[in-house]
Length: 511
Ligand code: ADP
Ligand code: MG
Ligand code: MG
Image: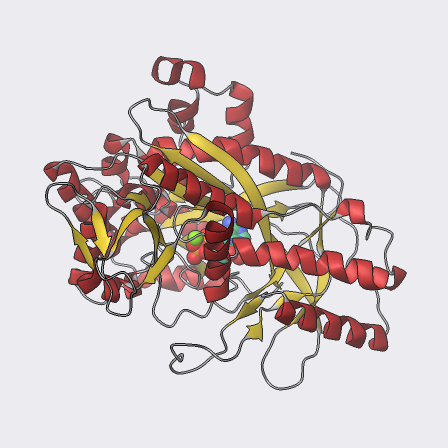
Protein backbone atom coordinates (compact mmCIF):
# COMPACT_ATOMS: atom_id res chain seq x y z
CA UNK A 1 0.00 0.00 0.00
CA UNK A 2 2.34 2.75 -1.09
CA UNK A 3 1.78 6.01 -2.87
CA UNK A 4 3.52 9.31 -3.34
CA UNK A 5 3.08 11.98 -0.64
CA UNK A 6 0.05 14.21 -0.89
CA UNK A 7 -0.20 17.64 -2.45
CA UNK A 8 -0.83 20.85 -0.53
CA UNK A 9 -4.49 21.70 0.02
CA UNK A 10 -6.87 23.58 -0.25
CA UNK A 11 -6.25 25.91 -3.18
CA UNK A 12 -6.22 29.63 -2.42
CA UNK A 13 -9.41 31.59 -2.99
CA UNK A 14 -10.09 35.32 -2.87
CA UNK A 15 -12.49 36.48 -0.17
CA UNK A 16 -15.30 37.17 -2.70
CA UNK A 17 -14.84 33.74 -4.28
CA UNK A 18 -15.09 32.09 -0.90
CA UNK A 19 -18.26 34.01 -0.08
CA UNK A 20 -19.82 33.03 -3.42
CA UNK A 21 -18.83 29.38 -3.00
CA UNK A 22 -20.24 29.25 0.55
CA UNK A 23 -23.56 30.65 -0.65
CA UNK A 24 -23.72 28.11 -3.46
CA UNK A 25 -22.77 25.26 -1.13
CA UNK A 26 -25.29 26.00 1.61
CA UNK A 27 -28.18 26.68 -0.77
CA UNK A 28 -27.39 23.49 -2.73
CA UNK A 29 -27.28 21.49 0.50
CA UNK A 30 -30.59 22.90 1.69
CA UNK A 31 -32.30 22.27 -1.64
CA UNK A 32 -30.92 18.72 -2.03
CA UNK A 33 -31.64 17.28 1.38
CA UNK A 34 -28.06 17.40 2.63
CA UNK A 35 -29.60 18.42 5.91
CA UNK A 36 -30.14 17.83 9.61
CA UNK A 37 -32.89 18.73 12.02
CA UNK A 38 -31.96 21.88 13.94
CA UNK A 39 -30.91 21.67 17.59
CA UNK A 40 -34.01 21.88 19.77
CA UNK A 41 -34.88 20.74 23.29
CA UNK A 42 -37.69 18.64 21.88
CA UNK A 43 -38.29 18.00 18.21
CA UNK A 44 -41.83 18.70 17.00
CA UNK A 45 -43.48 15.51 15.70
CA UNK A 46 -43.66 17.06 12.22
CA UNK A 47 -40.57 19.26 11.73
CA UNK A 48 -40.90 22.63 10.02
CA UNK A 49 -37.25 23.48 9.39
CA UNK A 50 -33.86 22.02 8.67
CA UNK A 51 -30.24 23.17 8.71
CA UNK A 52 -27.58 22.09 6.24
CA UNK A 53 -25.22 19.36 7.37
CA UNK A 54 -21.72 20.52 8.35
CA UNK A 55 -19.71 20.68 5.11
CA UNK A 56 -16.27 21.01 3.58
CA UNK A 57 -16.21 23.34 0.56
CA UNK A 58 -13.52 21.45 -1.33
CA UNK A 59 -13.26 17.68 -1.76
CA UNK A 60 -10.21 16.28 0.04
CA UNK A 61 -7.29 14.75 -1.89
CA UNK A 62 -6.88 10.98 -1.58
CA UNK A 63 -4.39 9.00 -3.68
CA UNK A 64 -6.27 7.08 -6.36
CA UNK A 65 -4.49 3.82 -5.58
CA UNK A 66 -5.37 3.97 -1.89
CA UNK A 67 -9.02 4.67 -2.67
CA UNK A 68 -9.16 1.73 -5.06
CA UNK A 69 -7.44 -0.51 -2.50
CA UNK A 70 -9.97 0.41 0.16
CA UNK A 71 -12.84 -0.45 -2.17
CA UNK A 72 -11.26 -3.78 -3.09
CA UNK A 73 -10.68 -4.66 0.57
CA UNK A 74 -14.35 -4.15 1.36
CA UNK A 75 -15.40 -7.39 -0.35
CA UNK A 76 -13.00 -9.31 1.87
CA UNK A 77 -14.07 -7.43 4.99
CA UNK A 78 -17.73 -8.18 4.20
CA UNK A 79 -16.97 -11.89 4.23
CA UNK A 80 -14.57 -11.70 7.18
CA UNK A 81 -17.10 -10.11 9.51
CA UNK A 82 -19.90 -12.39 8.30
CA UNK A 83 -17.72 -15.34 9.25
CA UNK A 84 -16.82 -13.83 12.61
CA UNK A 85 -20.52 -13.30 13.33
CA UNK A 86 -21.31 -16.96 12.64
CA UNK A 87 -18.42 -18.32 14.75
CA UNK A 88 -20.16 -18.94 18.06
CA UNK A 89 -17.10 -20.31 19.84
CA UNK A 90 -14.93 -17.38 18.82
CA UNK A 91 -17.49 -14.78 19.89
CA UNK A 92 -18.14 -16.53 23.20
CA UNK A 93 -14.40 -16.52 23.89
CA UNK A 94 -13.87 -12.89 22.97
CA UNK A 95 -17.14 -11.17 23.88
CA UNK A 96 -18.98 -13.64 26.13
CA UNK A 97 -19.87 -13.25 29.78
CA UNK A 98 -17.98 -16.33 30.93
CA UNK A 99 -14.67 -15.97 29.13
CA UNK A 100 -14.76 -12.65 27.33
CA UNK A 101 -15.40 -8.92 27.54
CA UNK A 102 -19.02 -9.52 28.64
CA UNK A 103 -17.67 -10.37 32.12
CA UNK A 104 -16.45 -6.85 32.74
CA UNK A 105 -18.37 -4.68 30.30
CA UNK A 106 -22.03 -4.37 31.29
CA UNK A 107 -23.27 -3.35 27.82
CA UNK A 108 -21.47 -6.20 26.03
CA UNK A 109 -22.76 -8.58 28.71
CA UNK A 110 -26.36 -7.47 28.20
CA UNK A 111 -26.15 -8.08 24.46
CA UNK A 112 -24.31 -11.38 24.82
CA UNK A 113 -26.78 -12.72 27.43
CA UNK A 114 -29.73 -12.02 25.14
CA UNK A 115 -27.96 -13.78 22.29
CA UNK A 116 -27.19 -16.75 24.56
CA UNK A 117 -30.84 -16.96 25.59
CA UNK A 118 -31.89 -17.01 21.94
CA UNK A 119 -29.43 -19.80 21.25
CA UNK A 120 -30.70 -21.79 24.21
CA UNK A 121 -34.28 -21.39 23.06
CA UNK A 122 -33.48 -22.06 19.42
CA UNK A 123 -32.83 -19.32 16.90
CA UNK A 124 -35.71 -18.85 14.45
CA UNK A 125 -34.00 -16.88 11.71
CA UNK A 126 -30.45 -17.82 10.84
CA UNK A 127 -30.08 -15.28 8.01
CA UNK A 128 -28.44 -12.02 9.04
CA UNK A 129 -27.86 -8.76 7.24
CA UNK A 130 -24.91 -6.44 7.76
CA UNK A 131 -24.73 -2.89 6.46
CA UNK A 132 -21.07 -2.22 7.15
CA UNK A 133 -18.71 0.71 7.04
CA UNK A 134 -14.95 0.23 7.23
CA UNK A 135 -13.18 3.45 8.24
CA UNK A 136 -9.64 4.42 7.26
CA UNK A 137 -7.17 7.25 7.44
CA UNK A 138 -4.16 7.89 5.24
CA UNK A 139 -1.02 6.98 7.22
CA UNK A 140 2.08 9.03 6.44
CA UNK A 141 4.53 8.60 9.32
CA UNK A 142 7.38 10.08 7.27
CA UNK A 143 6.33 13.11 5.15
CA UNK A 144 8.82 12.21 2.43
CA UNK A 145 8.02 8.50 2.58
CA UNK A 146 5.18 6.44 1.14
CA UNK A 147 1.56 6.86 2.23
CA UNK A 148 -0.63 3.90 3.09
CA UNK A 149 -4.19 3.41 4.25
CA UNK A 150 -4.89 2.18 7.78
CA UNK A 151 -8.17 1.05 9.28
CA UNK A 152 -9.60 3.07 12.16
CA UNK A 153 -12.46 0.66 12.86
CA UNK A 154 -15.07 -1.59 11.29
CA UNK A 155 -18.73 -0.76 12.01
CA UNK A 156 -21.41 -3.45 12.01
CA UNK A 157 -24.30 -1.43 13.47
CA UNK A 158 -25.94 1.88 12.48
CA UNK A 159 -23.24 2.69 9.93
CA UNK A 160 -24.48 6.16 9.09
CA UNK A 161 -23.97 8.97 6.55
CA UNK A 162 -24.24 6.77 3.47
CA UNK A 163 -26.98 8.79 1.82
CA UNK A 164 -25.70 12.18 2.97
CA UNK A 165 -22.21 11.31 1.75
CA UNK A 166 -23.65 10.69 -1.71
CA UNK A 167 -25.15 14.18 -1.51
CA UNK A 168 -21.87 15.67 -0.27
CA UNK A 169 -20.09 14.30 -3.33
CA UNK A 170 -22.88 15.62 -5.56
CA UNK A 171 -22.39 19.01 -3.90
CA UNK A 172 -18.69 19.09 -4.78
CA UNK A 173 -19.42 18.04 -8.36
CA UNK A 174 -21.96 20.84 -8.57
CA UNK A 175 -19.56 23.43 -7.17
CA UNK A 176 -17.04 22.26 -9.72
CA UNK A 177 -19.44 22.44 -12.68
CA UNK A 178 -20.84 25.74 -11.53
CA UNK A 179 -17.67 27.64 -10.65
CA UNK A 180 -14.84 25.42 -11.88
CA UNK A 181 -13.66 26.21 -8.34
CA UNK A 182 -12.41 29.41 -10.02
CA UNK A 183 -9.61 27.48 -11.71
CA UNK A 184 -7.86 27.27 -8.37
CA UNK A 185 -6.27 23.83 -8.83
CA UNK A 186 -5.38 21.56 -11.77
CA UNK A 187 -6.45 18.56 -9.63
CA UNK A 188 -10.07 19.68 -9.75
CA UNK A 189 -11.16 17.78 -12.88
CA UNK A 190 -14.43 15.90 -13.26
CA UNK A 191 -12.51 12.68 -13.87
CA UNK A 192 -10.99 12.99 -10.39
CA UNK A 193 -14.36 13.09 -8.63
CA UNK A 194 -15.32 9.45 -8.09
CA UNK A 195 -18.98 8.43 -8.38
CA UNK A 196 -20.86 7.76 -5.18
CA UNK A 197 -24.13 5.86 -5.25
CA UNK A 198 -24.27 4.66 -1.68
CA UNK A 199 -28.03 5.23 -1.33
CA UNK A 200 -29.03 2.67 -3.93
CA UNK A 201 -26.31 0.30 -2.68
CA UNK A 202 -27.43 0.28 0.94
CA UNK A 203 -31.09 0.05 -0.08
CA UNK A 204 -30.18 -2.91 -2.26
CA UNK A 205 -28.74 -4.64 0.80
CA UNK A 206 -31.96 -4.13 2.72
CA UNK A 207 -34.05 -5.15 -0.30
CA UNK A 208 -32.00 -8.33 -0.71
CA UNK A 209 -32.75 -9.32 2.88
CA UNK A 210 -36.40 -8.41 2.34
CA UNK A 211 -36.69 -10.64 -0.71
CA UNK A 212 -34.89 -13.51 1.08
CA UNK A 213 -37.70 -13.29 3.66
CA UNK A 214 -40.07 -14.11 0.78
CA UNK A 215 -43.14 -12.11 1.83
CA UNK A 216 -43.25 -9.24 -0.67
CA UNK A 217 -45.95 -7.27 1.18
CA UNK A 218 -44.01 -7.30 4.47
CA UNK A 219 -42.43 -4.06 5.67
CA UNK A 220 -38.97 -3.09 6.88
CA UNK A 221 -38.67 -1.79 10.44
CA UNK A 222 -36.21 1.04 11.15
CA UNK A 223 -35.39 1.14 14.86
CA UNK A 224 -34.48 4.77 15.54
CA UNK A 225 -33.35 6.94 18.43
CA UNK A 226 -35.60 9.40 20.19
CA UNK A 227 -34.74 12.98 19.25
CA UNK A 228 -32.52 11.87 16.34
CA UNK A 229 -31.30 14.88 14.34
CA UNK A 230 -29.73 12.90 11.53
CA UNK A 231 -33.13 11.71 10.26
CA UNK A 232 -32.67 12.66 6.63
CA UNK A 233 -29.75 10.29 6.23
CA UNK A 234 -32.28 7.58 7.18
CA UNK A 235 -35.25 9.01 5.24
CA UNK A 236 -33.31 8.92 1.96
CA UNK A 237 -32.97 5.16 2.43
CA UNK A 238 -36.71 4.88 3.05
CA UNK A 239 -37.52 6.82 -0.12
CA UNK A 240 -35.16 4.63 -2.13
CA UNK A 241 -36.72 1.45 -0.72
CA UNK A 242 -40.19 2.63 -1.67
CA UNK A 243 -39.34 4.11 -5.06
CA UNK A 244 -36.95 1.47 -6.38
CA UNK A 245 -38.13 -1.63 -4.52
CA UNK A 246 -41.76 -0.89 -3.52
CA UNK A 247 -40.89 -1.72 0.09
CA UNK A 248 -42.57 0.20 2.90
CA UNK A 249 -40.75 1.26 6.04
CA UNK A 250 -42.03 1.89 9.55
CA UNK A 251 -39.91 3.86 12.02
CA UNK A 252 -40.12 3.04 15.73
CA UNK A 253 -38.02 3.73 18.81
CA UNK A 254 -37.17 0.94 21.23
CA UNK A 255 -39.64 2.58 23.64
CA UNK A 256 -42.40 2.44 20.97
CA UNK A 257 -41.60 -1.19 20.27
CA UNK A 258 -42.18 -2.22 23.88
CA UNK A 259 -45.89 -1.97 23.07
CA UNK A 260 -46.06 -2.02 19.26
CA UNK A 261 -44.08 -5.21 18.56
CA UNK A 262 -45.38 -8.72 18.96
CA UNK A 263 -44.15 -12.12 17.85
CA UNK A 264 -46.60 -14.88 17.11
CA UNK A 265 -45.59 -17.88 19.25
CA UNK A 266 -46.24 -20.38 16.45
CA UNK A 267 -45.28 -18.68 13.20
CA UNK A 268 -42.64 -16.42 14.84
CA UNK A 269 -43.88 -13.60 12.62
CA UNK A 270 -42.98 -10.13 13.91
CA UNK A 271 -45.91 -7.72 13.69
CA UNK A 272 -45.94 -4.00 14.44
CA UNK A 273 -49.19 -2.39 15.46
CA UNK A 274 -49.00 1.31 16.20
CA UNK A 275 -51.92 3.58 17.19
CA UNK A 276 -51.06 6.24 14.61
CA UNK A 277 -50.67 3.61 11.97
CA UNK A 278 -53.22 3.20 9.16
CA UNK A 279 -52.98 -0.61 9.12
CA UNK A 280 -55.30 -1.65 11.94
CA UNK A 281 -54.11 -5.27 11.96
CA UNK A 282 -50.49 -4.17 11.93
CA UNK A 283 -47.81 -5.13 9.44
CA UNK A 284 -45.51 -8.08 9.15
CA UNK A 285 -41.81 -7.19 9.31
CA UNK A 286 -39.26 -8.80 7.02
CA UNK A 287 -36.13 -6.98 8.18
CA UNK A 288 -35.19 -5.02 11.29
CA UNK A 289 -32.69 -2.26 10.57
CA UNK A 290 -31.10 -0.70 13.66
CA UNK A 291 -30.19 2.97 13.61
CA UNK A 292 -30.31 2.82 17.40
CA UNK A 293 -29.19 0.33 20.00
CA UNK A 294 -25.44 0.75 19.48
CA UNK A 295 -24.91 2.62 22.73
CA UNK A 296 -25.99 1.86 26.33
CA UNK A 297 -27.88 5.17 26.54
CA UNK A 298 -30.36 3.80 23.98
CA UNK A 299 -31.44 1.23 26.59
CA UNK A 300 -33.03 3.23 29.39
CA UNK A 301 -33.79 0.14 31.47
CA UNK A 302 -32.91 -3.57 31.15
CA UNK A 303 -36.41 -3.99 29.67
CA UNK A 304 -35.16 -2.23 26.52
CA UNK A 305 -32.75 -5.11 25.92
CA UNK A 306 -35.68 -7.46 26.29
CA UNK A 307 -37.60 -5.54 23.64
CA UNK A 308 -34.64 -6.04 21.35
CA UNK A 309 -34.62 -9.71 22.30
CA UNK A 310 -38.28 -10.00 21.27
CA UNK A 311 -37.53 -8.57 17.82
CA UNK A 312 -34.68 -10.98 17.43
CA UNK A 313 -36.67 -13.99 18.54
CA UNK A 314 -38.82 -13.56 15.43
CA UNK A 315 -38.49 -14.71 11.83
CA UNK A 316 -37.49 -11.19 10.76
CA UNK A 317 -33.93 -10.77 9.49
CA UNK A 318 -31.89 -8.57 11.84
CA UNK A 319 -29.51 -5.88 10.66
CA UNK A 320 -27.53 -6.43 12.75
CA UNK A 321 -28.22 -9.47 14.93
CA UNK A 322 -26.81 -9.47 18.48
CA UNK A 323 -23.87 -11.54 17.31
CA UNK A 324 -23.08 -9.30 14.35
CA UNK A 325 -23.13 -6.28 16.66
CA UNK A 326 -20.76 -8.16 19.01
CA UNK A 327 -18.52 -9.02 16.03
CA UNK A 328 -18.08 -5.29 15.43
CA UNK A 329 -16.60 -4.76 18.91
CA UNK A 330 -13.23 -3.06 19.17
CA UNK A 331 -12.03 -6.13 21.05
CA UNK A 332 -12.73 -8.33 18.03
CA UNK A 333 -10.75 -5.92 15.86
CA UNK A 334 -7.80 -6.37 18.22
CA UNK A 335 -8.08 -10.16 18.50
CA UNK A 336 -8.12 -10.46 14.70
CA UNK A 337 -4.61 -8.96 14.62
CA UNK A 338 -3.18 -11.80 16.74
CA UNK A 339 -1.03 -14.32 14.87
CA UNK A 340 -3.05 -16.89 12.95
CA UNK A 341 -6.53 -15.56 13.74
CA UNK A 342 -7.20 -13.82 10.45
CA UNK A 343 -5.84 -16.87 8.66
CA UNK A 344 -8.44 -19.07 10.40
CA UNK A 345 -11.22 -16.88 9.03
CA UNK A 346 -9.92 -16.37 5.52
CA UNK A 347 -7.23 -18.81 4.54
CA UNK A 348 -8.14 -22.17 6.07
CA UNK A 349 -9.17 -24.32 3.10
CA UNK A 350 -10.36 -27.19 5.27
CA UNK A 351 -12.94 -24.78 6.63
CA UNK A 352 -13.82 -22.62 3.63
CA UNK A 353 -13.05 -24.82 0.63
CA UNK A 354 -13.52 -22.85 -2.60
CA UNK A 355 -14.46 -19.78 -0.60
CA UNK A 356 -11.02 -19.51 1.02
CA UNK A 357 -9.07 -16.34 0.23
CA UNK A 358 -5.48 -16.12 -1.00
CA UNK A 359 -2.42 -15.29 1.06
CA UNK A 360 -2.17 -12.02 -0.89
CA UNK A 361 -5.69 -11.07 0.20
CA UNK A 362 -4.90 -11.94 3.81
CA UNK A 363 -1.74 -9.82 3.60
CA UNK A 364 -3.72 -6.91 2.16
CA UNK A 365 -6.18 -7.02 5.07
CA UNK A 366 -3.40 -7.31 7.64
CA UNK A 367 -1.54 -4.49 5.89
CA UNK A 368 -4.51 -2.20 6.56
CA UNK A 369 -4.13 -2.52 10.35
CA UNK A 370 -2.25 -0.57 12.97
CA UNK A 371 -0.69 -2.41 15.88
CA UNK A 372 -3.24 -3.22 18.62
CA UNK A 373 -3.12 -5.08 21.90
CA UNK A 374 -5.25 -5.84 24.91
CA UNK A 375 -4.74 -3.87 28.12
CA UNK A 376 -5.10 -7.08 30.12
CA UNK A 377 -2.34 -8.77 28.12
CA UNK A 378 0.44 -10.54 30.06
CA UNK A 379 0.38 -11.92 33.57
CA UNK A 380 2.56 -9.11 34.90
CA UNK A 381 0.41 -6.29 33.46
CA UNK A 382 2.56 -5.99 30.32
CA UNK A 383 -0.34 -4.66 28.24
CA UNK A 384 -0.83 -1.73 30.60
CA UNK A 385 2.90 -1.11 30.99
CA UNK A 386 3.32 -0.95 27.22
CA UNK A 387 0.39 1.48 27.01
CA UNK A 388 2.06 3.71 29.61
CA UNK A 389 5.43 3.61 27.86
CA UNK A 390 3.99 4.37 24.42
CA UNK A 391 1.09 6.61 25.53
CA UNK A 392 2.01 9.49 23.18
CA UNK A 393 1.57 7.22 20.15
CA UNK A 394 -1.69 5.58 21.24
CA UNK A 395 -5.43 5.68 21.56
CA UNK A 396 -7.29 3.48 24.05
CA UNK A 397 -10.75 2.27 23.06
CA UNK A 398 -13.59 0.70 25.05
CA UNK A 399 -16.40 -1.42 23.54
CA UNK A 400 -18.46 1.57 22.47
CA UNK A 401 -19.69 3.19 19.25
CA UNK A 402 -20.77 6.64 18.19
CA UNK A 403 -17.73 8.72 19.07
CA UNK A 404 -16.45 10.44 22.18
CA UNK A 405 -15.45 7.30 24.13
CA UNK A 406 -11.72 6.99 23.49
CA UNK A 407 -8.71 8.11 25.54
CA UNK A 408 -5.79 9.69 23.69
CA UNK A 409 -2.06 10.22 24.23
CA UNK A 410 -1.23 12.34 27.29
CA UNK A 411 -4.57 11.50 28.94
CA UNK A 412 -3.65 7.80 28.96
CA UNK A 413 -1.39 7.48 32.07
CA UNK A 414 -3.88 9.20 34.41
CA UNK A 415 -6.70 7.17 32.90
CA UNK A 416 -4.78 3.94 33.54
CA UNK A 417 -4.08 5.00 37.14
CA UNK A 418 -7.78 4.92 37.95
CA UNK A 419 -8.88 2.01 35.72
CA UNK A 420 -9.77 -0.98 37.97
CA UNK A 421 -7.64 -4.00 37.06
CA UNK A 422 -10.60 -6.18 36.12
CA UNK A 423 -11.88 -3.56 33.65
CA UNK A 424 -8.68 -3.66 31.60
CA UNK A 425 -10.16 -6.51 29.60
CA UNK A 426 -12.79 -4.16 28.15
CA UNK A 427 -10.17 -1.86 26.57
CA UNK A 428 -7.79 -2.12 23.66
CA UNK A 429 -4.70 -0.07 22.86
CA UNK A 430 -4.15 1.01 19.26
CA UNK A 431 -1.31 2.89 17.61
CA UNK A 432 -2.31 6.28 16.29
CA UNK A 433 -2.50 6.64 12.53
CA UNK A 434 -0.19 9.47 11.39
CA UNK A 435 -2.45 11.47 9.08
CA UNK A 436 -0.71 13.72 6.54
CA UNK A 437 0.12 17.18 7.91
CA UNK A 438 -0.47 20.48 6.19
CA UNK A 439 -3.74 19.64 4.44
CA UNK A 440 -6.56 22.11 4.97
CA UNK A 441 -10.11 22.83 3.91
CA UNK A 442 -12.85 25.42 4.32
CA UNK A 443 -15.43 24.13 6.79
CA UNK A 444 -18.98 25.44 6.92
CA UNK A 445 -21.25 24.75 9.89
CA UNK A 446 -24.80 25.95 10.30
CA UNK A 447 -25.80 27.90 13.37
CA UNK A 448 -24.80 31.10 15.07
CA UNK A 449 -26.55 33.29 12.47
CA UNK A 450 -24.10 34.25 9.73
CA UNK A 451 -22.69 31.48 7.60
CA UNK A 452 -18.99 31.69 6.92
CA UNK A 453 -16.38 29.21 5.89
CA UNK A 454 -13.51 28.67 8.29
CA UNK A 455 -10.16 27.68 6.84
CA UNK A 456 -8.61 25.00 9.03
CA UNK A 457 -5.89 22.37 8.91
CA UNK A 458 -7.69 19.06 8.70
CA UNK A 459 -7.58 15.27 8.91
CA UNK A 460 -9.92 13.19 6.76
CA UNK A 461 -11.40 9.75 7.41
CA UNK A 462 -12.54 7.60 4.50
CA UNK A 463 -15.37 5.13 5.08
CA UNK A 464 -16.25 2.34 2.63
CA UNK A 465 -19.75 0.90 2.76
CA UNK A 466 -20.66 -2.70 2.08
CA UNK A 467 -23.45 -5.11 2.82
CA UNK A 468 -23.57 -8.85 3.43
CA UNK A 469 -26.43 -11.31 3.75
CA UNK A 470 -25.28 -14.54 5.38
CA UNK A 471 -26.04 -17.27 7.89
CA UNK A 472 -28.14 -19.46 5.57
CA UNK A 473 -27.79 -23.22 5.46
CA UNK A 474 -25.61 -23.09 2.34
CA UNK A 475 -22.98 -21.17 4.33
CA UNK A 476 -22.65 -18.63 1.50
CA UNK A 477 -22.12 -14.91 1.97
CA UNK A 478 -23.89 -12.67 -0.53
CA UNK A 479 -22.16 -9.31 -0.39
CA UNK A 480 -21.24 -6.10 -2.17
CA UNK A 481 -19.12 -2.98 -1.82
CA UNK A 482 -21.50 -0.07 -2.31
CA UNK A 483 -19.93 3.34 -1.83
CA UNK A 484 -18.04 5.68 0.41
CA UNK A 485 -17.98 8.56 2.84
CA UNK A 486 -15.41 11.18 3.75
CA UNK A 487 -15.56 12.96 7.09
CA UNK A 488 -13.11 15.75 7.77
CA UNK A 489 -12.19 17.28 11.12
CA UNK A 490 -9.92 20.02 12.43
CA UNK A 491 -6.47 18.52 12.94
CA UNK A 492 -6.45 19.21 16.68
CA UNK A 493 -9.57 17.16 17.34
CA UNK A 494 -8.80 13.58 18.38
CA UNK A 495 -12.30 12.33 17.72
CA UNK A 496 -14.05 12.36 14.37
CA UNK A 497 -17.84 11.83 14.37
CA UNK A 498 -20.13 14.11 12.36
CA UNK A 499 -23.15 13.41 14.57
CA UNK A 500 -20.96 13.93 17.64
CA UNK A 501 -20.10 17.41 16.27
CA UNK A 502 -16.41 16.91 15.50
CA UNK A 503 -16.40 16.42 11.73
CA UNK A 504 -17.96 17.79 8.57
CA UNK A 505 -19.12 15.87 5.50
CA UNK A 506 -16.67 15.89 2.65
CA UNK A 507 -15.85 14.00 -0.55
CA UNK A 508 -12.85 12.98 -2.60
CA UNK A 509 -10.66 14.41 -5.29
CA UNK A 510 -8.39 11.62 -6.51
CA UNK A 511 -4.75 12.61 -6.87
P1 ADP B 1 -16.30 5.06 17.26
O1 ADP B 1 -16.84 3.70 17.09
O2 ADP B 1 -16.72 5.71 18.52
O3 ADP B 1 -16.52 5.94 16.05
P2 ADP B 1 -13.49 5.04 16.45
O4 ADP B 1 -12.60 3.87 16.59
O5 ADP B 1 -13.94 5.36 15.07
O6 ADP B 1 -14.72 4.87 17.45
O7 ADP B 1 -12.76 6.30 17.05
C1 ADP B 1 -13.33 7.59 17.02
C2 ADP B 1 -12.41 8.57 16.31
O8 ADP B 1 -11.13 8.58 16.94
C3 ADP B 1 -12.13 8.25 14.85
O9 ADP B 1 -13.14 8.77 14.01
C4 ADP B 1 -10.78 8.91 14.61
O10 ADP B 1 -10.95 10.30 14.35
C5 ADP B 1 -10.10 8.75 15.97
N1 ADP B 1 -9.25 7.54 15.96
C6 ADP B 1 -9.62 6.29 16.30
N2 ADP B 1 -8.59 5.42 16.16
C7 ADP B 1 -7.55 6.15 15.70
C8 ADP B 1 -6.20 5.83 15.36
N3 ADP B 1 -5.71 4.59 15.47
N4 ADP B 1 -5.41 6.85 14.91
C9 ADP B 1 -5.88 8.11 14.82
N5 ADP B 1 -7.14 8.46 15.13
C10 ADP B 1 -7.98 7.51 15.56
MG1 MG C 1 -17.79 2.85 15.37
MG1 MG D 1 -15.77 5.65 14.18
